[in-house]
Amino acid sequence: IMSSKSELWDLFDKHFQEIVRELSISPVNGGNEICWSFERIKDLLEYNAPHGKRTRGLTVVAAFKTIAGDGISEDEMKLALTMGWAVEILQASFLVADDLMDQSKTRRGQACWYLNPNVGYQAVNDGMILETCVFTLIRQHCKGKAFYADIFDLFHKVILNTLMGQSLDMEASEQPTVDFTLFTETKHAAIIKYKTAFYSFYLPVAIAFYMAGINDEQCHTAACDILTKIGCLFQIQDDYLDCYGDPEVTGKIGTDIEDNKCSWLIIKAIQLATPEQIRILQENYAKKDPEKVAIVKRVFDDINIKPIFLKHEEETYASICDEINKFSDPRVPHSIFLDLLNKIYRRKK
Image (cartoon, rainbow, N blue to C red; front, side):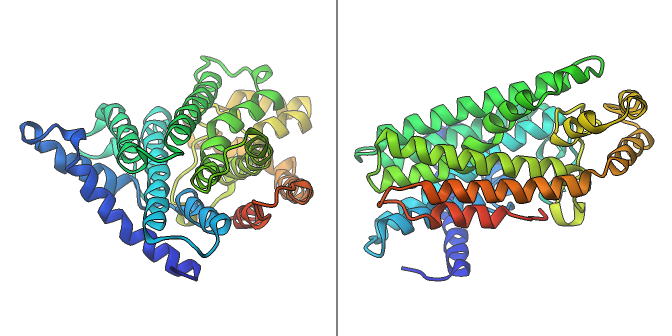
């Protein structure tokens, strides 16, 4: 049906317009009485869903293609593309809410959705609309199929995990004063596993598994273990790029320092800092003042956080590779995991 990565990207891209068409006239809208919302949903989808790297959505298609082999029918391919977009729209629903809560300014190279005229706090409702769109797609395309219940359950569980992770993430940053005792590796590991790893890495592959008839717990558990580890590496890279990434490349301006986030960088800094450096961090962390942010970054530099991060990235990469090599299920080629791991290794955005 297709061969190269660029062909897959183009196919995925084209399919988006079909998704938009379907969702902006679907029963979500309840017919003509509220036809104003046709345009709203169209705008909401076109602004928030298609401008990312699309790693999650494309993973559904690539993983399904890898497991199912060349005998995929056109209908199966269409369904994989639709489920890929369901994951991308779910991601958009999280980002819309996340940016409002973090008061971020830009996302994927454009103003955050809530900053648009006539949006503001309505972004809360818009995030919910996007989530509803996800379940509308699942219902309209999977109902009556053997994997319908599994995929429905999977999305529900993953959404719950993500919201719990988001809640943990906000809890640390909503403290009225800076309390570094809350910033532990255990807490950080829980935040990143729940907030990012499940929906970004396990979800797309699990969808492909279910579509291909792989539904036994043993295989899912083993794969989930590897995929959440890849997801945790991804989030640690995100923490690093929030501070050291180039906004021209990442498409967003980091706010972790200002937002009092329990990020990998601050945890490492607390472990390695002298008492004097800890004092400086405590005085300047979680302040909206750009000069104070610069002081925190200076302490990070003095501690040599960059080479420490690069070493951590390399060691984590090697240990995940080991784990992939130990994964033995004949139905699941290792390339599913390795392609994802290699896609994120040493990423700049």
